Image 1 (cartoon, rainbow, N blue to C red):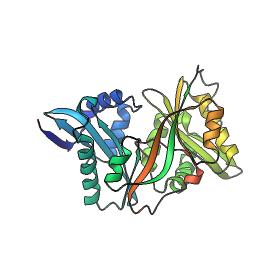
Image 2: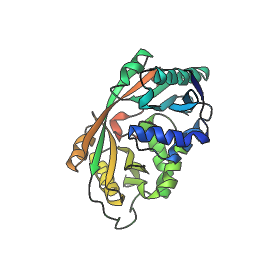
Image 3: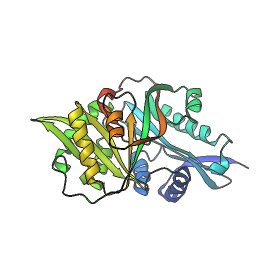
Image 4: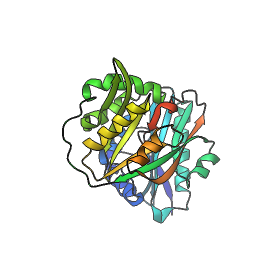
Length: 282
């Protein structure tokens, strides 16, 4: 029996989909293509005797930090060090590029492994899910849409701590109805985007400078989504997001810990962030 770690290609997307389905995750084939477009030299597959049994991806956000995601191992092959080997390979790649900081969102099961590799906790995130009887949208969004995307990207650079414009623009093109913005006069006070996942619509990032703007955005997203399941990855310490989500029927389904390795010189503005884009993207 032998383990080999190699570069991921587009031909590995079906294998990645199989692994994410086994894990019950929400990604689509287009999400895998986003990883490969963003970091064609930094996404890896683990093979055990020629069978694809694990994955890891990363996205480098300029010269500020990189995001590690999609650490998946076939349940039948767990306990053999495959996940750790994939992480080490991703770290080696990012170290070779002299990326000063690496970030990820860890499950409780994965956190001890990440800690052993030098990752430190930054803050806690709670995956919240809403199951409902959904109806069709009544009308197109009254605020936001493609016309607001440049202003949203500027706000997001402050909130996230780095430029991820190409990624967010791809999401906006795929789901323009989820590009939401709220203004107070000429000032953008809140925004959100969303994705149509394989299991649920996923709202995020969701950010606002005041609770009223945040509530308006969440209400609009719930109206425009046609799905009967919606996911939110909420910051537990946010002053408005957890209560706002719970009031609308969202229930906790799992916990995550945002972690970093290296110098976290660009933490962004988590105080303005209600929900992240997603554990795979940051």
